[in-house]
Length: 214
Image 1: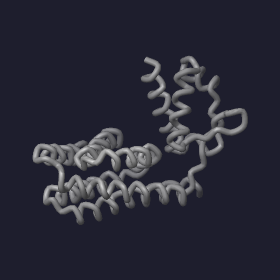
Image 2: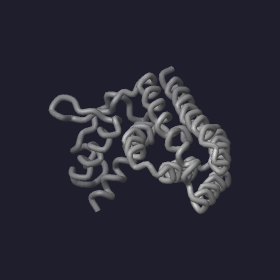
Image 3: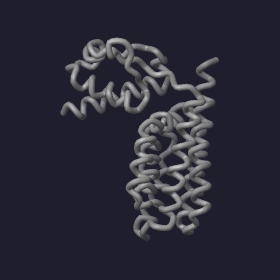
Image 4: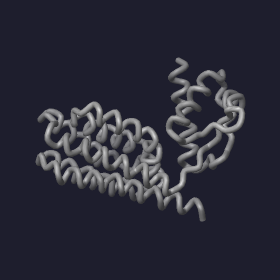
């Protein structure tokens, strides 16, 4: 129960930070948040620890948490690293996915095409798409490296769909191109397309951050 509550608190705080409702430097006080969510401090503490792991929060004096400042240059380095690792996973998946897994990937892409303009629904399908590629690569070491970095990038990647409705259509087109390259077992093209796909996510996000700073 505590883990589920902590997850809900974490998701709510992430949404607030990524959407810009909680600004850099804003304090995250255990007692205040516990009262806000109507829970004990234990799940709040767990949620704040996860925020710190995701580099969305930092600890300052007296171990108090506050919202981290994420600069565009920091995000650029993060997304570049994610792109390099995920493109390697995608290239391996193009060669290693079973026929059943290829058909499942096709179904995921089709679901993404037909889910409308709901960013939440598409975000879930998007996560399944990327997870299917990671699993299909069958390289646990690369997968662990990807998970560690993606924990920091995931909230920002999801923000694309909430902050820029046009990103849904471009992401769908990029997913379809990736799927076709994977179905063709073209590892080199798949690698290139995945690197470009992650870069596109960053470019959309950088425009969102630029709008907020004006």
